[in-house]
Length: 190
Picture 1 (spheres, one colour):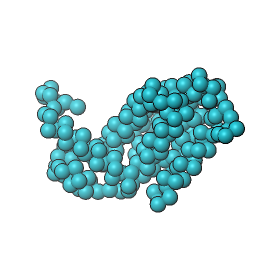
Picture 2 (cartoon, rainbow, N blue to C red):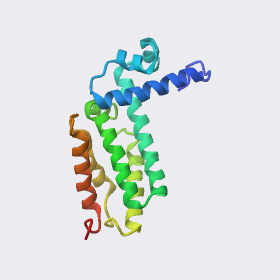
Picture 3 (cartoon, one colour):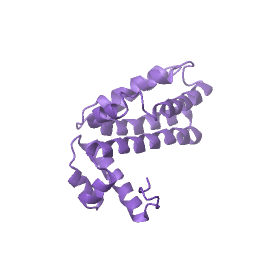
Picture 4 (cartoon, one colour):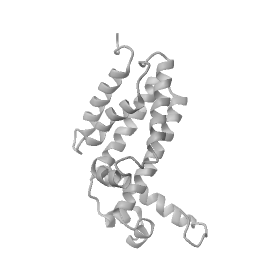
C-alpha cells in the first residue's frame, strides 16, 4: 500500500508492516484478545507505527486475514506440485488447522468485513485451491471423484470453531482424520 502522495513505501515501513503482521498472526492464534500495545512491542515498533499501518484493531484483523488466506491458497498449489496427493492434502489441512486458531477469535470481524463472505475476494481462489488438491487425489484414484470443493470447505469450517485449549491441536488432528477418511476412495489399510 503506497502513501497517498504516490511515493513508494520505504523499505523500513514495509519491514515494520511485515513484522506487525507476523506477530499479530501468532498473537491472535494464541488469544482472541491480544492488546495492540503488546503486538507493537513484540514486533519491535511503537504503538504509533502500528496505528499508522492499521488504524483500528479491525483493520489489522482484516489485513491479517487477507495476508494469511493468500499464503494458504498459494501453498495448496505448491504442495500439489511437490507431494503425493494425499500427503499434499493432509499437509494443507494441517496448515489450515493452524490458521483456524487465528480465525477462532476474530471470525465475527472477518464475517462483518466480508459481508458474511459475500464480498470475500478470497472465496473463489480458496475453492480453486481445494479443487486443485482434490483433482490431484482423484487423478491418483486415492480420492472419490465428484467431491464439491464447497462441501469440503464447509467441513473444514469446523477448524475455526475449536476453542483454544491444551488439546486443540489434537482435536483438530482427529477432525482432519475424519474429513480425510470421508474423502478417500477406500479407508486406510483396506
